[in-house]
Amino acid sequence: QIFVSLSFLFNGVSLDQAGETPAGLGEMVRIQQSVQAVLEPCRRATVGIDGGGSGVIVSRDGLILTAAHVSVISGRPVAVTLSDGRRVKATSLGLNRFADAGLVKIDESGDWPFVPLARHGQRLAGDWCFALGHPSGINLERGVVLRVGRLIGSHALVMRTDCHLIGGDSGGPLFNLKGQVIGIHSRVSEEIDDNYHSPIEAFIRHWQLLLDGEE
Image (cartoon, rainbow, N blue to C red; front, side, top):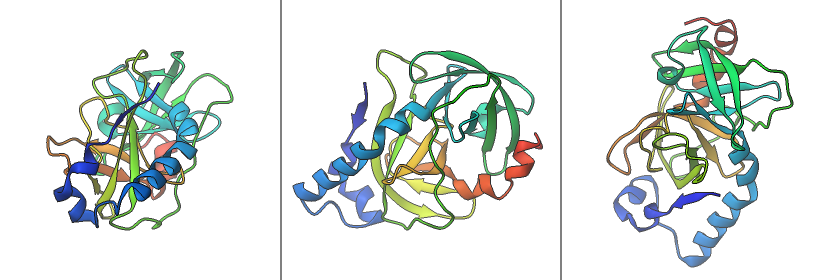
């Protein structure tokens, strides 16, 4: 089950900062169809971490992107909850505290559900995107929560969107409408248009160091 927040459609202030509001019902339907077309694999790959954070699996052998403040330190045992409720053991690898980027690896062997990463630089202010995560922690009856919005701004180590986030979303994935990960939720604000994410470049730039467990 997916719970969806669409309050962004009626918030002209935040959307106007990132581009024009939807032109009408037709565009809203197009956005909905685009999200629905890629949602299922994205949902399966979005996981809970230690009951209070989120992450996303990005490789078949179980590499998970999350926020550094969720993984905490390298070499730490981590409990991962999959979308079907299974709990598996994992270990935190490297992290970049400045970019709030962390990497976790599932300890068990398996063919894990995963999603692709977006290529470098393939996003612009005003692009539609959607956030998945476990706000307020894992709730299997509710399921993962979907928020749709737009990219407001992007820099080397931070992205800003109006995809409304709350505690527990930290470490969860931000997707483009192709179902590719473009960022990881980092800092949550009470303002709907003031939410921050670590861009995928923050992970790719230091990928080997993260794999090696460096901080």
